[in-house]
Length: 171
Ligand code: NI
Image (cartoon, rainbow, N blue to C red):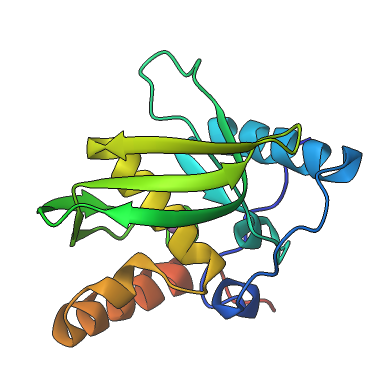
């Protein structure tokens, strides 16, 4: 089922998401629905708060063929590389704005998979960036928060303007 993607300034995006206590049918359904929603958007990652669920759940797929879905419950970054990289990011919850974000180039993430088994993944490049972006969502952090204050306010002003254009006044 395709879920409705919440966009800024929806308050759910600023809430700290709570850990999942048990990976059950409901969580597996949420993971599958989030992947379907992400592919349809289209996007390369999605966090549960973006579909209105304040739970520590993310999905991602950075493959060209869109055949490498990742389902992560309670993901935690357990290691970050000292070297960083700068690249442009966007977000399905902040449509049409993009900014250059500096992040560690590689990370290690510990999480539970869809069966509840504990796993560790070492990621670099685009996947590392994507996972850091999605895990930020679980703490109520958006990519614009990682920009300079000046850059952030320029982008959010542009976003506000675009948003008003997209939403016609109700009469
Ligand atoms: Ni995002």
